[in-house]
Amino acid sequence: MMTAKTTGFVPVCPLSALADGTAKSVDVAGEDVCVARVGDEVFALRDVCSHAEVPLSEGVVESDGTISCWLHGSRFDLRTGEPDEPPAWEPVDTYQTRITDVDGVATVEVSRHTTQETRS
Image 1 (cartoon, rainbow, N blue to C red):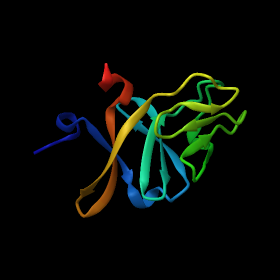
Image 2: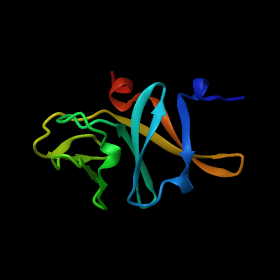
Image 3: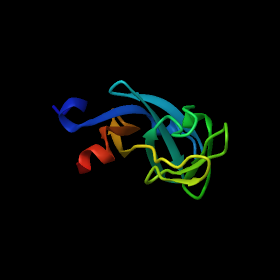
């Protein structure tokens, strides 16, 4: 039987709990991670603005695949974590996601390791 420890992915929520254009904070191996949905795609990034240290999951998810920090308006690309709107200049870590069937329920799973860690 494959588990989160053997696959490297952690189930975080049913897909139905993440409406299009929304984000939520989830725990992945002790890290706060923001999962966001844009259409049929689900993205995950560290749940902290690199400028102001506030949760990105409380920001606004845009249809262009970005999320805006609610405090000062910095925007981050959900695919890469790169900021494209000041005052943030540092990227945030991203995570791979996948949708799996868990007991007949479409479930969002997030990698236990950041995309940046798996490239090293």
